[in-house]
Image 1 (cartoon, rainbow, N blue to C red):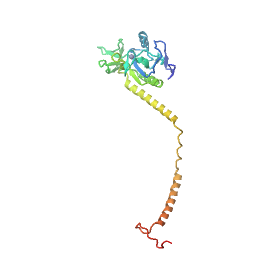
Image 2: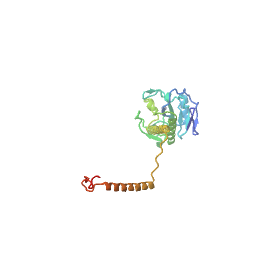
Image 3: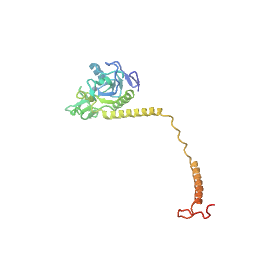
Amino acid sequence: MELERGRVIDPRVRDRIGELKTGDLFEVPVDTIVIHYTAGPTIGSAMNGMRDAGTSAHFLIGRGGQIHQLVGLNRVAHHAGKSAYAGREGFNGFSIGIEVVNAGPLGRDPQGIYRTWWGGSITPTGVYTGGHIHDSDQIYWEHYTDSELRVTEEVCDALCRWFPIRHILGHHEISPGRKLDPGPAFPLEEMRDRVLEKRRNAVEVAADTLLREREPEPVPEPEPVSEASTGALAALLRIVGAVLGRILRRNRPESGTGHAKPDPGGSR
Ligand SMILES: [Zn+2]
């Protein structure tokens, strides 16, 4: 994926910029990604829903892994609404919004059939069971498809190359009490840990490369000592040792007392 003036250039990405309401150019750097579910069955229903509500997101990911870009990445999209997290408010102003097609919370009717909020049915294999951190009573959710999860992570990886992303958050984290998306069926913790770890590694590699480029030319390593030359050196040392030994023996006092006897010949 490449980025050209806010447009993602990739054969898999369908450019639908301009179809939905779009905000102004970002005034501060984008450092956050917000993940949403559409609470609907299809890309088409999500587009209609956003058009009717006057909202938008930068990306819309379909059940089959389709990627639609709805807003240029240089512009504000209207996906977060009233939002606050870690001392900041108004997340539209510095975040990229990704909507993933998913029904969201499900009910279970007396016949045991799982129902979406609009009355659609979901087969049991498509149901994720688990409480929401902000709503433990809601325990049935539609599963995300593998394609959706893979493609969403891929888009997040690409966004980390283009923006200094520090946070990947669920809508429920910036609008608690008001929003539940993307819900417990979305493996948010795992995905953000992986993506942010990859980003940190990439930054470290880049920093290493910069540092290496600044270092002076490396001093050449000394020539490795070959076995032949170590052999020659050992032979030389043996000769030197033998010669030294002979000299020392010649000058050594004759007794083992350590006291040199006076020269019997006296000094001449
Ligand atoms: Zn949302």
